Amino acid sequence: MTNISIIIPTKDELNVKNILKDIEKNFKRNEIEIIIVDKSKPAIKRKIKRLGFAVIDQSSNGYENALVEGFKKAKSPILATIDADGTYSVNDLKSVILELKNSDYDFVSGDRSKGLRGLKFYIWFGNKFLTKLFNLLYHKKMHDVLSGVFAMKKEVFDKIKYDDAFRAGTLFFEIDAVRRGYSIKDIPISYADRLNTKSRITKSKPIYGLFIAFYSIKYARDYKPLLLFGILGVIFIVAGLIIGAFVIQNYIATGTLIEVGRALISFMLIVLGFLSIITGLILDMLSEIEKVMLRK
Ligand SMILES: Nc1nc2c(ncn2[C@@H]2O[C@H](COP(=O)(O)OP(=O)(O)OP(=O)(O)O)[C@@H](O)[C@H]2O)c(=O)[nH]1
Ligand SMILES: [Mg+2]
Image 1 (tube, helix red, strand yellow):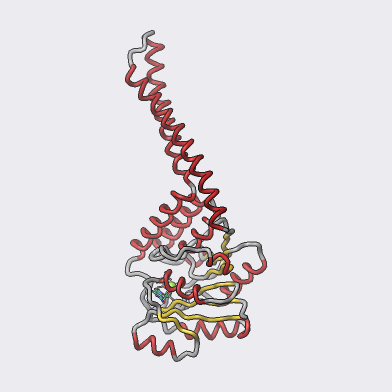
Image 2: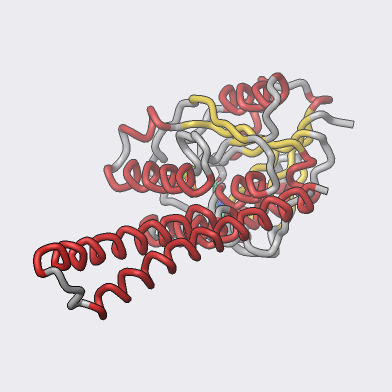
């Protein structure tokens, strides 16, 4: 059996030839399984099929679902991927796989921070924003959550639900891994801009980014309820205390409690705040139990 399955998604991407050559230079033939998942136009598809590697005709849509189709067919204990457009180096893919093998982590991806700095501002900013959002919501310390180079133990993928991948980017795999309590990290890799060809993944990166942000938040609601309900609780309590402070100030100044309505609102807000925090604590406990169940 091979040790590593490398999945390469292609959509009208003849540059895959160069990636395949580099893979053959960097890995021993008997240690890897290569699977191309293709969604190209017929003429390009024919050329890709003639390269002599396993090709799956993608039946679903999108980059993420292409990977899901490939990973499902893969047989090795380590699953990895690299884009076919030449923006990532196979040497970095190898480093990511080695890190997975030699560390205790279950999921390792490439951190393109340095290379992204040289790209268009909105691409750099979008990546940073989505990574910070992920770190905040899932309590991680990643540097780049949207890399096209990553590797994970097969065990992690086998636990992933497959129905919600479309337009979630690499986050689809990362969030599912984290929700199941698997460990995740990234290591620095190089990254170059696409040369003379158009993006295949989407027509609009900002809209794609919005989909990804939405996906992050949607799953955080189940994953970290204490964060969401805790923030709401603190807002209610602070609002209640501010209103209450005015009531007390007037009481001290006049000697009578004239603002009964305000006093009641203040009291209700403080109670609501505590209830919200308690709800968060209960849901948090349930989600911890769910996490343990999901891993089983
Ligand atoms: N099978 C399949 N492959 C896809 C699909 N969309 C993109 N790809 C491939 O997935 C990889 C990533 O797509 P890119 O268009 O490079 O995405 P990106 O890196 O975010 O965008 P650029 O910065 O423009 O390169 C490439 O190898 C594409 O050929 C798809 O729907 N199906
Ligand atoms: Mg690309």
